[in-house]
Length: 343
Ligand SMILES: [Zn+2]
Ligand SMILES: [Zn+2]
Image (cartoon, rainbow, N blue to C red; front, side, top):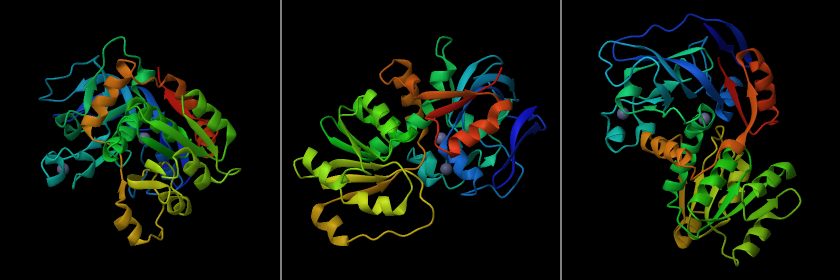
């Protein structure tokens, strides 16, 4: 099969790769669309690159069942499916609480096993057993469904932040995930303030119904947030980027009793924090990583019933042959959401 194969840091090649072979309890999916995520690019550039190379990245996958292994009853060849990308054991302390993303034995597409930037993907038994392969109705477009995985990560953040109607939510960063946080927070009925350095991104956030746009290059972010929130700060702050200094500065914009979520995966680093701030202001400091199968299924429903429109996030369509162009555009932050379409 043809695949985008990672051979090392910043070394990705479009080439022939052995097709996966289905094992007992497994399925093979013929990829229809694979989404390109900031995580893929970070990984390619070295942050968390797998030890065993070559490998295939891509954890946002939708497609058609192409083969089923012995014992697989719930799926048949030709079924249209969306895939939750984490293989969790289903038995450990965390899995038993439904927190499969924290599983002690987790692995998944693009970390541990080969991912979706390939014509075929093998899904291990674990993903099927936890309900991570979800059938799609015939009229649920792959282009919409492929955005359920990233959207589910914003649902996980909203859930962790106990987001509720009427809250003020400050989103730091209007990149692809920041815009998804915006859509999720609006669905919760929140008032959304979004900050970024780039006017075009803010304009897009404005079209996606953000209530307040702040260019933090031009304006003082803290002053603006205070003004909008009657001096309190935001009930929820979602930091949708991984720059330690910005994380440190943004924490302080959380209102008393509020919640701050470190969402973007930062590099190894340290930030300064006055413990009195957490104590006297009763701040909850959280992080979220990926999402649970329940978040994933709920996100598919939100897209399916048009509670959240995601199609306007799709800015670029590629094929495997133009994948290197996609990588360049993603590195230079030239696109909102890019997808790779397979035939
Ligand atoms: Zn992703
Ligand atoms: Zn587990």
